[in-house]
Every structure is written in structure tokens, then in C-alpha cells.
Length: 343
Image 1 (tube, helix red, strand yellow):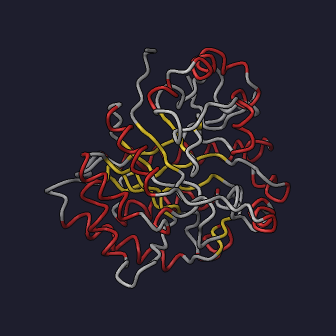
Image 2 (cartoon, one colour; image 1 turned 135 degrees about the vertical axis):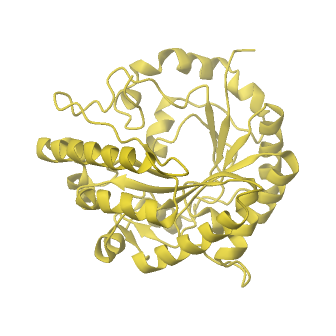
């Protein structure tokens, strides 16, 4: 058996189900054609069946994986078996790592913000709420179908439940965004808002420009915006440093590092893959995926089998997976991956 240190797994349980149309989303953006094309062809991706859900979670637990993420493609709270997902985490002692779009949808009448918080917080290591504007206009324009006022209200209600039971279990709260030209100047205000609301972390990612219509949102293809980004990074770091001198709980920034202005195409020169040998992705059919790169692109890395017909532990010890571990630095996709961090 090869030596891996897997600690987290993501199950893309319901990638075609979302109630928002965020402009940068691979499938639900107003500029995306993939979902419409699948719907027209009658090939919408299925939701993960409950028996496969249970199989994967139990096999992951046996492997020693302790952090589990429900769908990051689509809104996980719209997954019809999400309560079963939570029950399995409770039973197996797994920590839920949730990314939600912040609308806290209610497939059932009793599924309000407080219901979700009471179910999620006691087993969650971290809850990330997607957030992309400090002004109503920016938030609405990027995350279409939402509003800043609703986001603030929902976050306050969720965090109130977190705080009420924090002496029993502390669930970290993260405000998560995509770094874009249209929200760049609002990032300092987002940081102040996150601290004021009781978040523990501000995390972001640089843009995967899936569509020509949003290529001009990229901070890394224009020196002026890259320089401005570096200034924002320095400012945010200084704000957090000052805040943490007297804060009861330390606030954190994640992925706030300066870009190399001499080589904007490489976000992290010599940076290692943060996923291979550490994290696992499984799609609704059970297909084993190696990372969170856009689906069509990551399929160029190879076919790694399916959990539907092969035990998870065998898939991570396959020859094809271990070959990728040794050779990923030479793949074009990996060289340009914006999830790497500086060495």
C-alpha cells in the first residue's frame, strides 16, 4: 500500500442543483451553456443516490478520513438526502466541512437558518459562506439571485446559534469569495464586515475564467490589477495583525499572498499540489476525481475509476493515481492551477 495522508473527501452530491447564478460558476453562471446543453440532451447529472452516499462515507471513515465536504458544485443544502449526510457524520464521528451559498434554502418548511445551524454546527469543523460584495450592487451583480441584506441576516442568525453552543463545540466560520476586479476594492470592507459579524476567517481564490465574458475579471492578466491586489493583501494583513493583538479569538486570512509581478501566469512558482495524496473528490455517479479543477479539464489527467464498483482504498492505491502523484508537475493543467500556494 502506498503512503498517503488523506484527511478530507468531497462528495459532489448534487452539482446541477443550485438556486443562484453566480457569474464565475462553472455550471450555473448566466454565461454557462453546459447545464442547458445537458438538459436539452436529457443528460443532466444525477444526484448521488443514498446507498452510494453511505458506501463512500463509510469507506472514507475506515480509511481514517475525518473531514467530509458535501457538494461544492451546486448548493449542498438542496441535496434531498442532506439530513442523511448529517446523520452519518454524527454516527461515524466525522467533521463536516461545509460551503454554502448563504441563502440557506428550505426544501422543507422547517428548514430555516436556525434548523440548519442546529443540525450542522455540532459536527462542523468549518462552515464557509460564499460572499462576494460589501455593497448591495456588487453582491447582487456577482452572486445573481442573492442580496447583501439577506446574506447579513442569514449569517447573523447562523453565527448566533454557533455562539450559543460554542462551549460544547466550536465551529469555525469562514467568509469565502472569489478575487475579482469587480470586488477588489471592496475586499478591505469585506474583511471588516467578516470581523464584525463574528467570522473567524476570510478566504478567497483567484478566478478560474471558464467563460470569455468574465476573462476581464481576472486579476492576474493585467499588471495594474495585480499591483492593486498586492496592495490590498498588505492592507488586509495589517488590519488582521492589529485586530489580533487584542482579539479573544484570532482572525485568519487564507490565500492572501502577493502575486509575483514578473510572472503573473504562474500563481505560485514551485508551489506543490495541495490535493494529491491528501484530498479526494467523488462525483454523483461515484467517479473518483483527483482535484477540484473544472471537470472537463481535470478529466485530462486520466481515468481513476469509480467508487461505485471499486473500494475507495483500492482507487487511491492504483497505479494510475500513484503515477499522477509522481508526474503532475509536468501536466499543463497543474502548471497553471490557481489553487497552488507559494513554496
